[in-house]
Amino acid sequence: MRYQQSDPDVRLMLRVRDDDAGAFEELVRRYEARLVRLMHTLGPSHELAEDLTQEVFLRVYRARKRYEPGAKFSTWLFTIAGNVARNSARTMSRRREVSEVDAPRSQDAPSNAQLLASTALDASGLMPTRVSEGSERAQIVRQAVESLSERQRMALMLSRFESMSYAEIAETMDLTPKAVKSLLSRARVNLKEMLQPYIDSGLIPKEVGP
Image 1 (cartoon, one colour):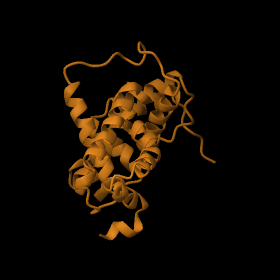
Image 2 (spheres, rainbow, N blue to C red; image 1 turned 90 degrees about the vertical axis):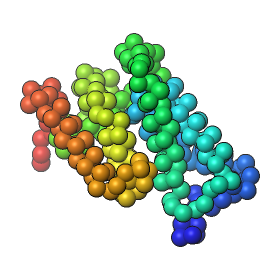
Image 3 (spheres, rainbow, N blue to C red; image 1 turned 30 degrees about the vertical axis):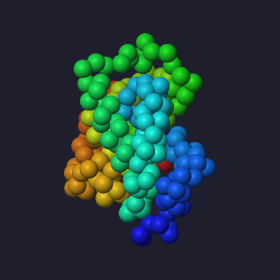
Image 4 (cartoon, rainbow, N blue to C red; image 1 turned 180 degrees about the vertical axis):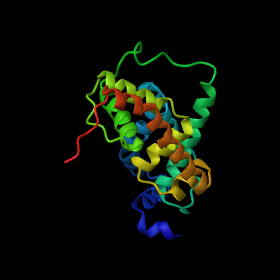
């Protein structure tokens, strides 16, 4: 297979398939933080993000004997993550978790808020100045990202923070590359529409060019 020689994570997963516990631990070490970050953008609870990440790794381990290196390992892994996220969204559809305002904040909550803020601002193309963590501005842009559909948020995060191509995101999300391009375009338009009034009012100051 074409990725077996070039992708070190594929080689690790082949060792996992052969019941190498150390290889599985290494894959967890490499991908755990990235998966938690992705899951945290799909819901307000850090604890839920950690639980979903553990579910992803559990599915990886259960599927190890059926694994065939036909694609990049990260694409295969994030496909599983997407399925886990969608299943969780369906389960939670009739009830929403308590808001971040009322929920206990974990230690990394500010950095995750800043991550969402950065995503919204950069993706919208508005280029505002840095948003202070924990500020009203951060809350505005965080809410802007959270108001996107689950699929738009996931496509945006895979594109921006995992640097996946349209084809890779399409495989991960079980879509066509054309549908992914459309998702990302709508996400950017939606973000720009939601954030522009705050830019115009000066609540989110626009960066002054050189």
